[in-house]
Length: 98
Image (cartoon, rainbow, N blue to C red; front, top):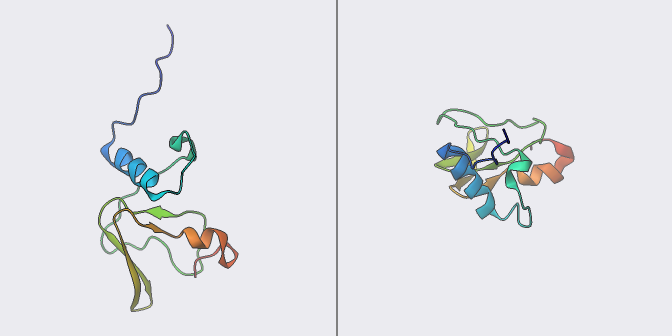
């Protein structure tokens, strides 16, 4: 029996994440976005996605909601649905979060 071709993800979060990644422009020219191994995560309002000094080994594309980038008690900026966070640290700052 032959294997059936790969089916698109039926997970709505993965589908929305893939769509947000494509819309961000970060993957222009990439034929198969799934080959990049995008991994959607859900965070609670009080969760931290990273801290200053952490290795810069990923970026985030915001699918729903918003994220505040903070330095101690000060909010530096807020990113919303469709925005990308963390991409600059991948190529700058010696590969660590500022």
